[in-house]
Amino acid sequence: MDDRRHAIALFRYSLVREAADPALSTRQRGVLVRALADRDHLGPDGRRVRIGRNTLDRWIRAWRAGGFEALLPADRSTAQLRTPVELLELAAELKREAPMRTSAQIAEILGATHPDIQAPSPATIRRYFRRIGLHLGVEERPRVFGRFEAAQPNLLWTGDALHGPAVDGRKSYLFAFIDDHSRCLVGYRWGLAEDTLRLEAALRAGLAARGIPAALYVDNGSAFASKQLERACAVLGIRLIHSRPGQPAGRGKIERVFRTVREQFLVELEARPQGCADLAELGRLFAAWVEGVYHRRTHTETGQPPLERFLAGEPPKLPTPAELREAFLWAERRQVTKTAQVHLHGNRYSVDPALVGASVELIFDPFDLARIEVRYQGRAMGTATPSVLGRHVHPAAKPEIPTPPHTPTGIDYLGLVEQRLAAEGRQRISYALLTGDPQPDGRTDHLGSQAELPGSNTTADPHRDRSGGHADGDGTSTIPPAAATNQTATSNDKESR
Image: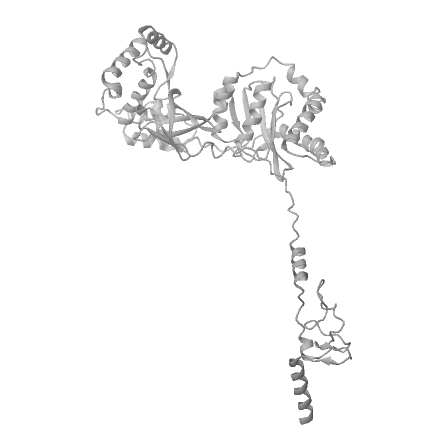
């Protein structure tokens, strides 16, 4: 009950907040109050209500006299008669017994079986069924799909994503929407990520150019099942329909368009000698193909070019720039803390103290988290003042930054090693020269190979003999001490044998 009273007080405060400003004159306040009394408002229980001028004036006087507490309704929580739990459980059993029974029929049965007790109303029974999660359990029959086509343009748009070629070293994706009646590509955009941001860019371009559709039919991918897309459709009055999992038959038209894109556009893109430089060029080429070829070619199913068939209908209802901006702002709900602050992705903002404990809606541009608009039950409650602003962009708002081209450094590390070793004049150690055991062909083995490293200066001295000594001018050799010791030990060993 306390939560309910607090919600009612917040509803009253959100209505009179602006009109109760002491800086307003009587005339200005009267204009605001009359405007509030002339339209419906979303009440705290979710229903549309209309508040009279006298009631609004009374709330304004109460707020001025006692503040937010004066707007709380009187506590009238008294013991009231409730429906016996046994009757509600019996109603649930009757529903499980025959799922096709309506709430009115169950109320009739309860009245007949318990004449001494006032039976619950059908509305009470329905509320109880929703509370316990009791749904209609009817076995699903196999669905038969027939051929369907919207009667006129902008009655139904179908959206999907196509996996495209690699651009800038990354995979590309095509988000596209087609009009069901004309097969016209109303909105499309290439991107380097399959996310809500690129989806909204394609849809926004289509809405600005082709008008607002009555319904939007999409699949259940993460980009299409986002709350941002739901909000955009709700703002513009578009009915958002998701296809049932495992039944993609309803998206057959756009899948056929994607097949045409693969067969007529992507194949030619791969055959280009220069290829595709970047994402911007891919978008320009695709737009030229759509507007110059696809929209002008006669469709085999409709017998008309898609653009001609789309323009043959009534002029589309185009959204205003303000409506488009409002539709594609992002929104997230947050609970206001006891210190009248809200947290959003590491940032902390201060809000109106009257909103303490309430669940508010934060409206913002995903690329600018410094400006946050606060709304309560659809009504503006001022802006949130940043207290701690560590992140300026939403984590999911990732711009498409092309991969910078790779520039070779030109460093030849192995060549540098070779030059350094040649400059030092070093060669591998020849153990065969130390032992004096040549190979049968006069060459030493691999470990004692005398093949010299390129650039070494060991062969530049013609007087160096194969034993490792130095030849004098008369042809005699000077044997190194280690080699002479080895030869002496060898001759002594032969004599002893």
